[in-house]
Amino acid sequence: MTTATEIIRARAGSQPIRMGLILGSGLGHLAHQVEGIAIPYADLPGFPHVSVSGHNPHLHIGLLNGVRVAVFGAREHYYENGNAAAMRPALEALKQLGATDLIVTNAAGSMRPDIPPGDLMLLSDHINYNGRNPLIGEPTDARFVPMTEAHSPRLRQALQEAAAAENIPLKEGVYCWYSGPSFETPAEIRMLRLLGGDAVGMSTVPEVILARFLGLNVAAISTITNMAAGMSDEAISHEHTKAMAPLGAAKLERILRRFLLAMQ
Ligand code: HPA
Image (tube, rainbow, N blue to C red; front, side, top):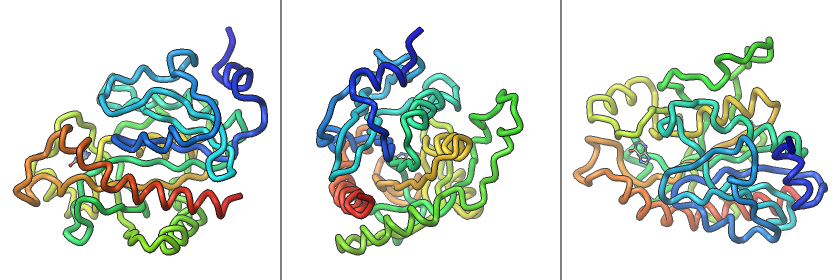
């Protein structure tokens, strides 16, 4: 069988990819700015069948600010099929294509009053509150992945410099992975705050674990779409997430473009 990596090379050329970007809910705009080609996930063996509205299931390969990137327009979440390793084949393909770095983005609820909706949060670390691990079943000793400094200090520094150059505040905080698809209760949010969480969402953590397993440097940014349950009077919904994500997305795009310029 032809592998995803072979299909990508045949269609997009075999020059190595420098960096991967996974786009979260409502952040799809950047994918269409890649100067290159878009391959439907359906054409790529092992890539996820994504069922969440607001996502664009294409892999975009080409240049973004002069850097050869692979932009994943959509991800499979754990809550879709209960598979924490759903993104493993896609990230393995990224590694085989030569990438060394991965930037992950998501939409999240804030548990910090000083990081309101519309702001961005750079992940300094995470809490795998879901408890599921994408490496369960991996038979080799490579499964024992150290997670100290899992969120690359070098990439975070570069993202902070890009944000400063764009005059965009970028606070850092701890992201808690909650399984979804239901949102959290106010009591759960009070608990997550006590545990040291700053934002909560339904993705990203398994991808960070897989990236470290594969030897990719990784950093992640949340666009804050709402205050977490119980922290404001605003109703929380997926519609609201999709409506609010573009607010942060414009800032995120400026940071990522500036960051890529510095990576050239
Ligand atoms: N909780 C979990 N996931 C989310 C939220 C939230 O409040 N907002 C956007 N994604």
